[in-house]
Image (tube, rainbow, N blue to C red; front, top):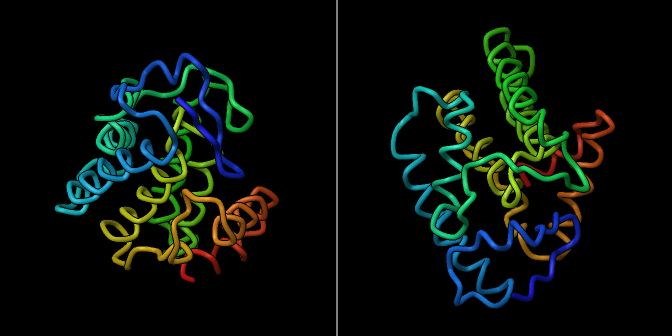
Length: 194
């Protein structure tokens, strides 16, 4: 399979590529189409009703499996390999639990405005890099679910363009994430509602 990755995307290891459930896929365009079909079904499922366990490790994995489960054998399972970003794979579970606990505190204490809670949540999910593939898409959907189900807000617009394809919108998104890495959330807060 020919996989060309847009800037900022994390390449799959050969073992992870072996987990593809659809052997007829031969390139990135076909893969993106199949993944998007799966993601659309997951969004319908996730927004249908408020999950009681949205801020749980179990739900985070379940959502990823719903988003990518018909495409990847390892969907919903934390990555088992090192990547060019993210925490060490063996500390993913603890880093995720710490984040979920932080978000609960932010909500209870009203420590940040709702958009900033969701933006910080999204940024840290991406930074932990839970899965072999689909981390940005998963983190964006998790942030949107947090907004809608727990913060009583509308979903983010995420630049109003596809972030899976290379282009100016994706460049602005990645630049905003890098600014957040330096604790400057202003670019991300501007981007998510643009």
